Image (cartoon, rainbow, N blue to C red; front, side, top):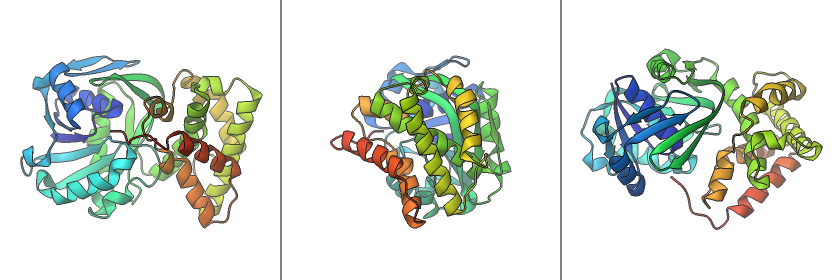
Length: 320
């Protein structure tokens, strides 16, 4: 099995190490600095699950599609930041020769609707998404550290495609030590993740706090409760559903399990702010605001949080 991982950040490196550990042939498509780092240092997956290390003889690294052979990849795993989706989807379309005829694309990103850019060029039976409630950081360019985990990685389709077609990827991740499986209800789980991310990521970045620290005071809890209530209003008005019927049901699990399980994790939004990189706020809180406007729902707390993050990142560069 030949797998191309686009984006060699924290998630991409962890996925690559997982795939190699199960005997898959892995290639990375990365920017020059990251490509050079993993060529020189190899890759490492460390943290709360099994540690895995491979030198550069165990994988290929590309920085240009012209370097890649034709008719080679069975799966493309997208592990870049969401801001790159437009360019990545266009480039993949222009270089379809590298894909086998039945190749699948799986998007390992935050947010909802991240498949839209790829559906412009690829059939809905080829495009899948993953729900991740596992915390990854990249302490060095070639190292992925898994810092937190609360639920299995879930892979499925937002377009009613057969999840069985990506079962092998879920099995590989699971067998490598990170719990993973497929689902036919990915939309519900992605909205569960949106609730989690939109509540914790931007607020953690604004307050420079871990997830657990955000639950320590009544003031930050009040902000999070308002964010959650507004998102449930948007879900109801938009015709979407998730795993909980009411915001109170979600809050019970949020404070009793989800935050304790990820207590020390510091959000990817905070990591981006600290690195002075653009965040993924537009596919998180920005998506909530978009749906709210379409359905005439008021979301003042989400709008305020969004505006603060956009102000903080105004002069930052886009990240890998």
